[in-house]
Length: 542
Image (tube, one colour):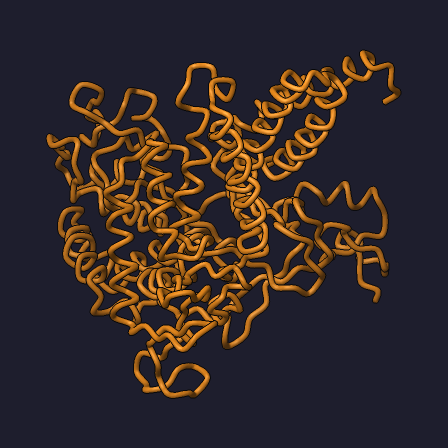
């Protein structure tokens, strides 16, 4: 199909190869228009329907690992529940490492943070009220910080009407939020506080402020460049569809832009999705969290399938003697206001064994899960033996791939090797084998159930590559086979490391995953050199 060149309006069939949304008659006109087009060039377009509302659809085939788009935030600010933090850099403050802003009194780190553009909104509005802020309590959640990111949003109405008009169009779930505990808290401690404290009764209504509170709650993303993370709201990113088995991953660039990359190959016309909640939670917890924070019930294919694509991620072990089956309810998708599930069948909360006639009541199933969760919370953190005991004991009650078992197994895999000053070289044969087995199992599991969790997959594969290399070194020494045996292990380790680096390729160097990617790149070069030397040693061609 032909169109008109965006520069000269000449008829042409050539489109921008990245977004397929703009026509160019020549490379010169494409280069000329790039300064303008680069801010909008994304291989996705906005669609809208009654079920999903606005959502993003791929305009072309997108390869796994390809960046779909990056985007600057509309607004950033500290989390609403936080101890006093610097309003320039978001570092946690104490009396000793803070100073009041000379203009408004809000505590900051230093003169640079006082002058930071991040701090301008609340500073301007505090100065306008005619009285400085005086924060004296540090180290615990401070109620005045609940209003900061909301004030920054409101400040846009005068300071940047273009961004304000974009922000205010985002979903707030205004009606659904009413009568929730979060609504009541925001109404008292944000809406009423902001209007009185900043003397804005004539500028903003309580309804307008409550809508902004909803926009931040529904569309806010934690950006982990500070501890605690700060919150950012993005425009295009807010239109990404939710799916508990998302096809795209979310990360961030060093300058705070969100980065959306394909976690699998996408076809033109396919909806682009991320997961709004933690995909490593069980179905009950994921759906509850989405309802409480995003105000919708999830009916994705993963939530519809109680086995979660055969992983049995939420399954309990049948306790009937000699039975090898597992218990799950018939569905997790109950309509709260009806006596039927979403398929129209009569409600049944009981859990059924897939091998025998054993039935466990909903109350008993949830009591067992809650008891195990309590024990997990109380378990000594960072202790290898505690992890082993948990897995051994509760393996009698949970499927091996239950989310609690995966959670503890993942922790155990990362802990093995950290208990000695010499890393994996100081680990026992038993624990080294255990680490390798766990890493392989979890890597395969994550790829099957949560492929968009590229950071977790990348990190566990990094652990696996190191474990395999160490195993090869030991066995080569033990058997005396030397280079020939070691080469096989190193080739396996190298292949896994390359996959890890591909998964972590977009992670910023400031983050743990980015630092691992840097270390992994060094490991890869060293491994290539070692392999070359080993091939020479056995006089074998590469």
